[in-house]
Amino acid sequence: MTRKRLNPYLTGGITDNWTDYLLAYQEAGADGVEVGLPFSDPVLDGVTIQEASDRALARGATVAGILRDVAAVRSRLRLPLIAMTYANLVFHAGPSDFCRRLAEAGFRGLIVPDLPVDEAEPVEKAALDHGLELVMLVAPVTTDERLAEIVTRGGGFLYAVSVMGTTGERKQLASSAAELAARVKAITDRPVLIGFGISGPEQAAAAARVADGVVVGAALMRRVLDGATPDDLRADVAALRSALDSEVPAAHSQVSDHRD
Image 1 (cartoon, rainbow, N blue to C red):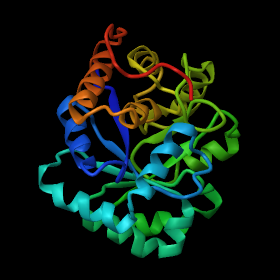
Image 2: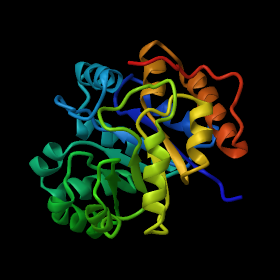
Image 3: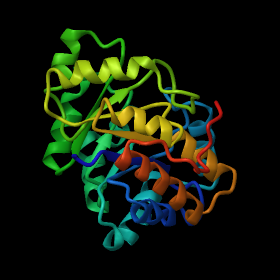
Image 4: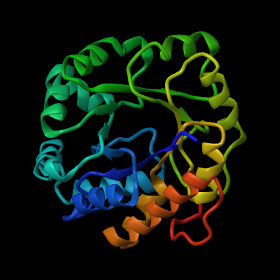
């Protein structure tokens, strides 16, 4: 069986030792890490990720500082890092300069959730020029015509948003996730990862049965906000890894299952 991909999320700069969480994710079996670059108006983020971004910004986190932190541990990282941020930051710096700085720090990909496919060309070109994969998002309401265009753009995997709305923990995997994954996989061979609302091992296993992997964000960030250490998060991510590998719900995870 092909290994299912696990991409946990981490808000850059959320703690003074935030890169230790990156290394913990790696040790626990993550296949990549999405690093959130905090933004003051994160329109697609739910309460938890917004709180994580606010905490990072209150600590003085900046894009430049986060990139310096990543560069400092680059030699210890074996897994790809994917920056996740908003179009405002990308276009304010200029797509080419922004992507160049990401690549120089050691990033391999970029996700811009509020970037419409109609406006993606300059960012896509800049990403390609600097060796980054621009990961495109698809949603349950994406029309077949638009979906056909999206799967031809960017690179790497396709990020399937399981539900309409913002990120956040949910009690069960939305039925729309399976339907969306099936639609995408019917027209492309690129990997499809399901995100938004994957809150624990059982949901991760369910998503892995219909897709090629999962993105887990809010549930892990809630743990960090509540004081969980890198060792704690290593255990949480290891439980998710085990569930994906076996496609059987893991029994004892500390990953929260409550809603935002």
